[in-house]
Length: 625
Image 1: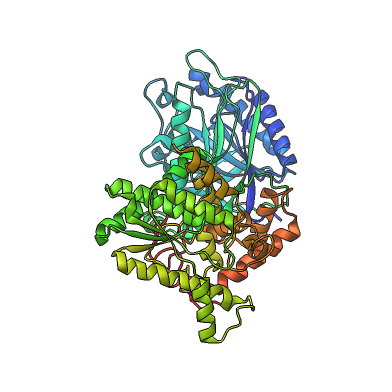
Image 2: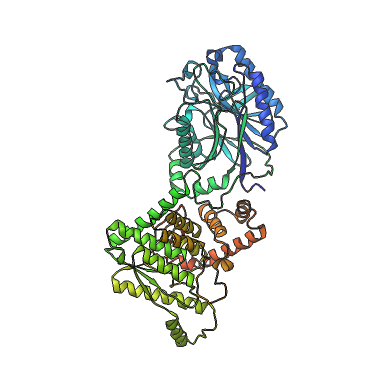
């Protein structure tokens, strides 16, 4: 089962310029290699049958004839191979010569796509050799004995799994690339056959350009450029290739390699489709392109293959930036959200319940930084510890330490006696450690914080995080409620990472040691006195798994089988498949049944590409079955 992944490759053959017959053998070798891995489509560089640096020899009739013979050899070779290949070669149509990408499958030419933008500046002089796709009115071509082959820049090829379009080298560098139009007309993947010389910093610029294009178009992109065998008379071609998806480069070739290479990656079609389906701007743009595309059908067979793509345990982080940099950015978003709320609401005082756990620790750190930015004394932060039945000495000590080190106003208000009185009022046996016993403590703490907010003319800063909100792991109108929830956009695993980051950058050794101990403390609501402590993950499940499930459910709406497959690969060696499936089902059950808590969430800053605010990202009925 491929789970809507498709294996795509870029092949860089080692060629002899001006020897199409030799080059066809090099192409066939790479096609055979790609077939072994279950590759569905492979692209080759621009003019890969002739060589790009051949100059005026491109107009020699012998070369054109040999190119056709070479293509015929590839067609014959692939007759029984279920792989789509896109070959770069010159093609003549009505006396004009075009720089083309030729798509083939099982010995049949599916389409021929000519290059639109012909560079004629700097080191490039292609206008001397080729016509543009805009300079012909022909819609079909004939070659290798095949007639009425679809020809043109407006072609999209539909396979059994996905649709793709073709553009060639300079086309990508244009202000409006053909890929833009092709994707807005339905192409999900773009193949770029290229011959781009290597210059200082050009590769970095190219990577940025491909990433931007694939993010804007929410598409897959295969870039394949000429390499070994090209002339070095004035230019150097290093055979760079890369495969990108929705703004991320997921595979790249080795640079400055003198050998043939294949770059392979598993493109996630569900990701492309989910992003497009959820983006109204994409379809608004699509409606502006009135010209229809021509669709060509490829009757390929979809084979199962081994998915080799790596899935990170923490999909929230970009692989292109350091974790430290991203933690600092998340923290800054939280701080900015709180400072704006304080300034706009004309509030100078903050009230926070401090437990000595991860969430309240981060909320307090955010509050301290917000007061610093606003020029307010940290004593305007009223940090309240409210020890109850299950409060441990470790968390209580850490709470006291962090409040002291940050220089905030602190107060301890024990709640056990008050809860005992309340249990007597409602006739509840305090020896019965059930949901009433637990929630009464959470609600009483919120009761205290809200009233202190009135006393100090301030706001209660919420501490609950995105993971708890997705799972509904919060007491309704208890810790669920605040006046501004600074952690509402950050899942538990990232809360831990941010606190670690702040510990590593703390100027106080005592504060750093305290933060690190908080990171190492088992997550617990500490509502029930019990031997060994009340560990949240023993009941609700491991947060790394839940945060993985949350991301792929909220961001892309992936199915259970797909998420399980990805989690099994990401967490192999840590959790067995049965455990992962069990906790996924726990997540899904709780996620559906707890929407009523999310339907009335306090305000809080969105930090990631996902969120659960009922005013923005997640609008579901509260009684979702």
